[in-house]
Image 1 (cartoon, rainbow, N blue to C red):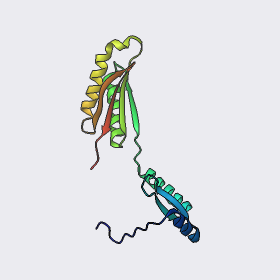
Image 2 (tube, rainbow, N blue to C red; image 1 turned 120 degrees about the vertical axis):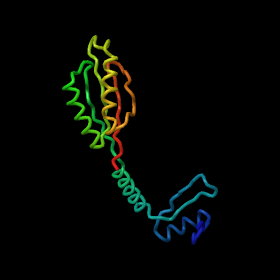
Image 3 (spheres, helix red, strand yellow; image 1 turned 45 degrees about the vertical axis):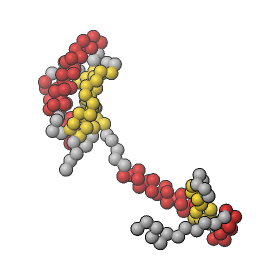
Image 4 (cartoon, rainbow, N blue to C red; image 1 turned 90 degrees about the horizontal axis):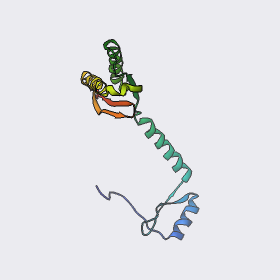
Length: 153
């Protein structure tokens, strides 16, 4: 299949310029580093228009990553935890990534083990809806964990 009906013409630059002028089109340099340089005779405005159109289609097809956050305290009680877990399940089912974090205020930083246990418990309970991308990690006064949704079949 390689080389089927492909006709490549090689012209000196002056001849190519003359041909472009006769056809009232533009001579566009495609590959300047090649020896000899590769040029094409095309309508440049039409080329730019089609390129913008292609870029727009590619941009619309690109998936946008949505990140939802859930905030806990180091001593979040069971009812609040269950309430926030329900929201986390809904976010993951909708296809959004989840950023769960425990925020430590003042001296509550001494409870960082409790925060880590809380986040690991959440990760374990959300195992069927998503997978952990980043395990709990302490960044300043926050312990952060990321959970990505599982692919829906």
